[in-house]
Image (cartoon, rainbow, N blue to C red; front, side):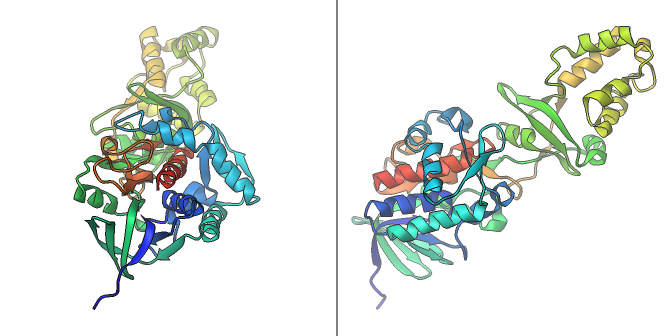
Length: 402
């Protein structure tokens, strides 16, 4: 006869950022909580974040920095658990931090210390954590939910799904959250890789491969979405913060527009003035003052190569040629063939549709007691600590409701 299931007030599946936040906050309210994690260790994605330094939040983490089918969904949770609330948690444990740029806050003690704090809060508040345990089946009863796991059956009135999205499968990412959502009748916004490098066809790669490792300050845009940061040339295409940011807004066949001189609003006027003042100057000389030398050469020889630009002094170029070169510098349009996929994506775009969830409690409207938090939900933040803040805030919102 099988053993009777062990009962908990709340079962959280997934020991990542959202799951651990929810567990410690729910246990602090006196609930009997267990976290079930299929990987051997908790917090794998926390440990690799920010190159191990952990960009744990962003001071500017407002709803405008999140992509969702419902742009208002994130407002409630973000308003109730702010970046300063997480800073207070770190301060409680003696951890300091610094701002790198653009509101991005990094732990001075590294990513491992962030995970230690979350685990310590779970331990102090009495939340149990089971690692290396898979959930094989979930069924619903009048009393809540029954989970059949690799370490025995578990029963609970409240089930929180915090297993993340499909990004970085080598860390154990799966579509389990989407399977559970579908099982209970919730819809899914098709998941896709986000914050991910672009790949290109052979013709474009001929320019990019020799430039691998070169970074260029730029402004990239797709429609109304625009970001000012560095792009990085790679052997496979384009990466860097600007590209990762805009990738969340990209769809196949869409061109990316790149302003290669964001601090120079009138490139055409500047070039014409340079032409008049220094008619014998070569375009390459001017370009080398604007960009890293390797890119300056590539811009003149390859991007602007169908003019005489690389072989004529400025004074020998027509106004029409200068106009074309200036237009290219301010609006280089390039169409990726794809991305490097979930293997290289920092997060997943899409997920459990927000129209089936309460924005206040993260609970499924049609399935009382079932909550979805973190990356598995159709809320995707910008690069720079925004996705961690969504994990903290959504986990906290669910914990308050439990």
